Length: 99
Image 1 (tube, one colour):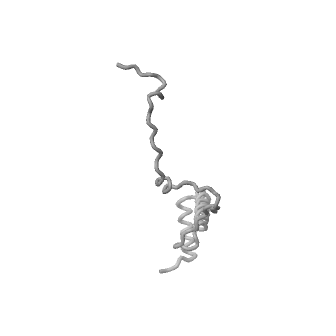
Image 2: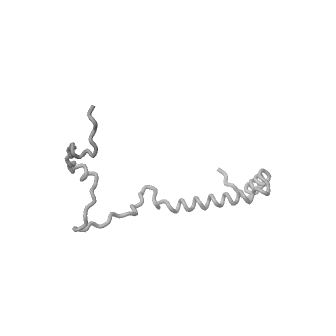
Image 3: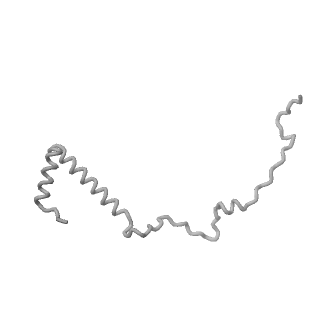
């Protein structure tokens, strides 16, 4: 496969210049530069190796013996529910009419 040399690059630039004109060339160059900058920053934010996963950034707070433990879904599900309070007739604020 032949490599691209100087004559091919010059012919390519002339063709691009003829197709797009002098007014659009700076805009195209600016767009290509912005695209390359974005690509470069995205590649730097990724891990160095493709197969590794990044380490978690948040750590659990240390547990001290006297600190209260917040309830979790397991402990809440294991806790028995409070018995239901029976409704008393005297708790009704207004008496209902009888038919």
